[in-house]
Structures are given as structure tokens and as C-alpha cells.
Image (cartoon, rainbow over all chains, first blue to last red; front, side, top):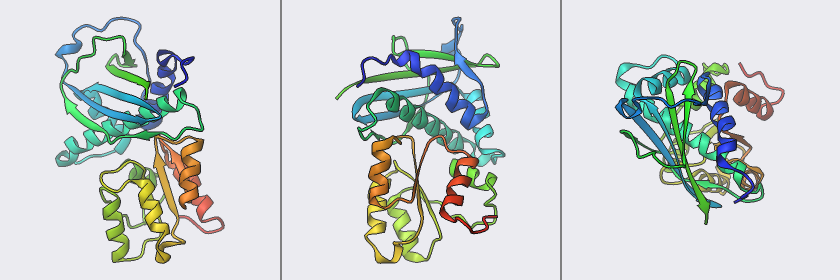
Length: 151
Length: 114
């Protein structure tokens, strides 16, 4: 891993590019603490990173925002397909952010290998320095946790 | 699903799509009939994209079918690996209708696409 690169410094651009590119949504680092995070109905997706570094990248969105992002990505969604499609969209976002982040912190000549996205519900334990809180232009929170270390 | 949506926005509405979960199912579909193009994610349940490309290119029947691999793990090393195995184009995520459209133009240069 290129230890000269601080994950916190590259993550905002990656997150912003990903949400704008995939869901036409502006997202930037939250400069103020957002009250009541734990009261929201959270959905999360995480992707394991296997080589050349190892770790996990997790993306968590409130359910309402996850639905909005999904509709932005896929257009009209039938109600019967909504749950599955939201989880698919969450996985795609986590996968994209993980790939971009790992691409920034490892040398270009190293082949990256990522795992399949996993998804779930609930407010994960994000009270750590690995957690980064972002905010949409409508004030909705987006949480990213990036835990990477040398193999 | 996202890739299909991009294809539709890119103007490929008249194409017939067959969507499957993983690489094993791709091989079953190919065995069952001809396909003009394969768009595949790299990371999939079961047979992954790397092994899928390897198996497709080892079969004489599928030597010329264009393969677009879409991956979040794209960097020069990964792209070289996949192209070396026989992928036609490697796209990094996030893909967009414009990116897919450009890839199709590259593959079908000189042919009408819409």
C-alpha cells in the first residue's frame, strides 16, 4: 500500500464522483455533526478487498436515500422488484467506491481483487476513525467506512 | 441491471438481453445458442469474469464473440491481464451509457449501432 496516500484525503473525490456518475447526486463531506443518525433506517453494503491490500469498504445509506439513489440509477422500478433492486444498487455503489479507493492506494502494476458485495440492514458500528460521514445536497447522510491494511 | 439500463439509454433498446447471475450460467446460455456480445462483471458468484473469459476463449465456437468486462478493480495491471486472456474491452466502474456506447462503436467500427 502506498502509505503516502491518506484515505481520508482521497475519499471525498471518489465518493463525489461515484454518486454523481451513477445517481446524479451531489455528495460531499459533512462539516457538521448530524444528529439522530442511529435513529434512521439504515441499509449497508460492504465489499471485501483481498489483494494487493486487504480490508473492507462499507457504504451505508438511510433507506429513503437508498431508494432515491436506486430510482436515479435504474429509472422506474416496479414495487415488487424494489427491495432487490435497492440492494443491487447499494452493492454496485460499494463495489465502485472500493475499486476506486484501492486503485488510488496501491501501485498500478498490482492486480486488484475484490469480493462480492454483501448487503444488510441496521446501523453498523461506525464509531471509529475509519468512518467518514458525507452529506447530500438535501442534507441526507452517507456513511463510508474504509478499513484497509497491508496483506 | 445497471449495465442493462446503461445499454438501453445508449440506444440498444431493440437488443435482446439475457441476464444471468454468474459465469456458470453464462456458459450454459452460450451453449444453448448464439450471442452477439457478452457484457460481464468481473466479480460474480461462482465462476468469475477472469475464468469466464479464459473458458470462452478456449472454446473454438466463441473465439470471435466480443467480450466487454466491467469491473471496479480496473487498473493497468488488471486490464492487461483481461485483455491478455481475450477480453475485447475492459471498462472501469462506474460505467455510463456514453462509455458503453463508445465501447460498442469501437467493437463494431463501421457498423450502424442503432
